[in-house]
Image 1 (cartoon, helix red, strand yellow):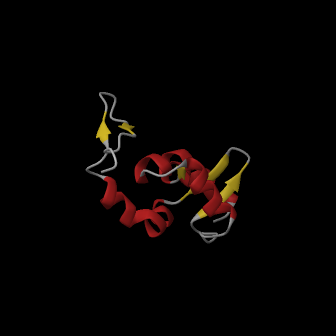
Image 2 (tube, rainbow, N blue to C red; image 1 turned 135 degrees about the vertical axis):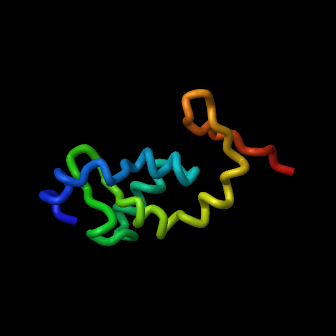
Image 3 (cartoon, rainbow, N blue to C red; image 1 turned 45 degrees about the vertical axis):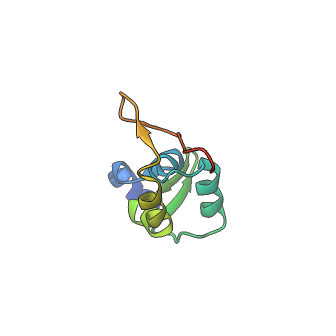
Length: 89
């Protein structure tokens, strides 16, 4: 992905924080995956504001995880997820 292309399509990409919230993972895990090159140049780009990640790239790496945790997370009144996990048994 080229920086010139980001300007016209910036609303199509997610921040590391958004990816973390969607897939129930730590923001630092998303950043580490980007830094280690787990996504190709069409899936993520590092900008001065942070990583911008394509939804397809995020889904490729963490798509299965979203399915596993969807019942463990609850939405608050603002439509955001609370990181509530069931107690260990």
